[in-house]
Structures are given as C-alpha cells and as structure tokens.
Length: 496
View 1 (cartoon, rainbow, N blue to C red):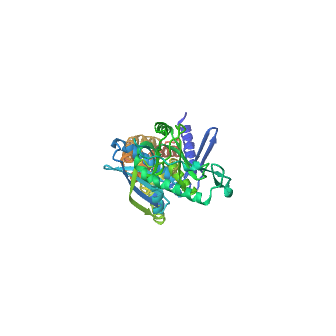
View 2 (cartoon, rainbow, N blue to C red; view 1 turned 60 degrees about the vertical axis):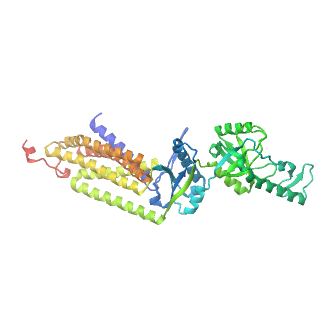
View 3 (cartoon, one colour; view 1 turned 60 degrees about the horizontal axis):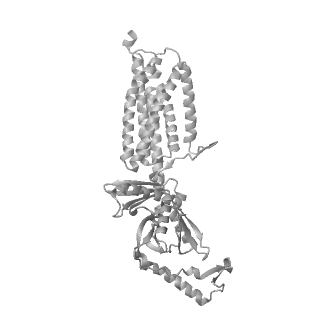
C-alpha cells in the first residue's frame, strides 16, 4: 500500500474516532444500547463526579475483630464487610439518591478501616443509621445437659377460621375462644417470648450465621397469619442447617439477632431443604424491613464510626466550576503558545489536542471513572504531557529543517528521533501511576487512574494523529519549510 493511501486511510480512521469521541463526550450525548443476538450492551455515558465535586457524605469506620478470629483471616473478613455494606447501601433508600456509592477498605498500621463515600447524600445521620442497622444473625445449638425444656407449642391449641375481618380463633373442637381464653392465650405467648431471654445462656455459637443466607423473604404463617421471615441458605448453609437439625433432633435451637434471642423453636425433624423461619410477633413493616436487612447480609466484622464529613452541594459545585475554568484556561494558554511558537504545526497539534481531550473524556465515561479533584488534576497534568510530546517532535523537525532537509523528510525524522524520549518519559510516568494506584489512598488512586489514561491517549494523539495531519498537509513536494513551519535552512545548510 502506498504511503499516501495509507495516510488517507489513517486520517479517515482518526476522523471516525474523533466523531465517536465527540458524541460520547458531549454532555447530553447518547447512551450505549446495543442488542445483537445474545449481545446486550447497555451503558449510561455520563461523567461521574466524586464526593468533593458533587457534595455528599464521607464516613470512615474502623473494624472491630473478634478475639477468636485468626489474624490471617482479617483481610478476607474486611473485604466481606465491604461487600455487605455496598449491597446494603444499594438496597436501601440511600441507593435512590446515590449514583456511584464508593465503599473501599484501607489499612493504617494494624487497623483496618472501611471508607464509605455517598455522593449526593447530605443527611449524615440517616446514612449512619442505614449503614449501621444491618443486623447480625446467627443460629446457636443447645449446650449439653441443657436444662431448658420448651413449653408446649401454644399455637397447636387453636386454629384460625375465616379470612380478613371474619377471621376468628377456635379451639381444637371448633368452638370460638372466649374473651377469658383470648386474654390467657395472649399472656402465655408474652410470657413465652419474655422467657427466651432467660435461656439465652444455654446456647453456644455455630458456624451458621447470616453470612450463609441466600435470601430472606416476608411470609405469613398459615396458622396464626402473623408476619414471619422465611430464610433460605446457600449450599454451605444448607449443609450446616441439616447437620444441626439432625444432631439436635427434639431439642431447641436458638436464633439470635444482634445477640438478642428472638426465637427458640424445637427441632421436629431433620431439615435438608435449607429453609428456616423467624417469628417474633413482628408487624408487617418490621418483618419486611428485617427480611430486607438480612437479604443484604450480616456484617462479618463489627465496625465503629471514626469520622464523618459532609460536603455541601454548593461547595462541590464551586469545585466543579473552578476545575472547569482551570482546564479551559490551561488549554487556551497551551494552544496560544503552540500556534505562536510553532505556527502551522502548532495549529495541527491543537487540533490533535482537542481530539485527545474528547477521547480521554469518552474513556472516562466508558470505564465509569469517578472524577474527583485529584482526578481532574491528573487529567490536566496529562494535557501537559501531551503537549510535551508534540514539543519534542517539532523541535527535532526544526533541527532537520535547519539542516536543509525537505519538509517531508524533516517530519519523518522528527517523529523518529523524538520517539525514544517520548516512550521513556511516558513509560516512567505510567510506572509511577501504577504504583500510586496500588499503594495510594482513594484520592491518590483517582489521580493515578486519570493520569495513566491521559498518558496513553496522549501517545496516540502525538504519534498517530499529529503525524497523520502533517503528512496530509505537506503533500508530495520537496518544500523546505519556511516561516509557517517555524524554521528556515541555516546559511551553512544552504551553502552545502
């Protein structure tokens, strides 16, 4: 393929990339919705603003590990806590106002911490309440020689007839219960529920906890019509539950919620289905909330709130405006410098820089990068690196023009001679960004990610886009540059 034809095809490809990047980077550009056969790709393209730009709530929790937990398991436990909190936030009413909640872990010395950022949420107390209300659920087995003898199942003494307003309690012979019998039944049920607290010490913990739950749903008891919560365990939970019901047949097992005994049913038969039921005189709303909380998972590790910060929306908006203004001023100053100093190549470099900005912003949207002030700083810094690559290329091109070489040769030699320096400087920057993304805090990681993306895109625009533009405009002739290319052959070159 001839060089000229190759250059034109490359230009078409660059133009196509620029158009797609322009559509994707446009503030109200179209979202991705591709459905071809089994392929279903849907993604919302928008700039995700971090807490410092949008405003919201920032919470830092410290993990409180149980004394019996092996330190080797700390990392796994804290990651499990992070996952549970993330599910908890997304399933709660906070999820309605938080488009990009950020939950991550951090280790400071021997302390493990969980950082929760909720952009757009300014009610700190409500956020703390919802995050902290995740219940701790566990199932406990009876201790050997357990003195507790369960009371007779009171619900077996009556049944429910009718539905709705016509429902009534009748005894085993079908006779309606009298007022005295109803009062006595209520007192017995209350006494049985109250008595649970006195027998809590007769049970010991097992490996069956809320972490083994697959789902929890609101149900209604077929006999009493009271709201209950039906639990379904995962595969490991089903095995543990089946073993417990097999080993302690005819004995009670206890269900504890936040270390409070709420139920102690007697095991009537081995249960292999992996289903259990929680009842506790719940209202419908209480049972629904409990089911929702349990579905999101119990916290593997207890957490204690260390700090809380609320960033107002007005402060975030001011930060966005200041960041945008800084970026625009920076781009304008760079464009003016490049055009005045390098003239025609400077104009082409500015066009490549515009494409660079659109492509970078498109990648941020596609990857779902959350932009923070540090991230914006990384992006602006990468603009400088993109300009630096063009400066190296144009300076080498000038040197070739001063030697009396043709414009076409000077362009090619300028890119060839500058490539090594561009490659080495950008690779060293990428290594630094990679290390910062691993060992840095969340703010530093945001800076590193945007910087790395910007560096990679800048290499593409400097080496491919700018070179393609220059190849197109210089044509086939043997021009020697001149004023519009920022250099004339030196007297010595002319004599040679």
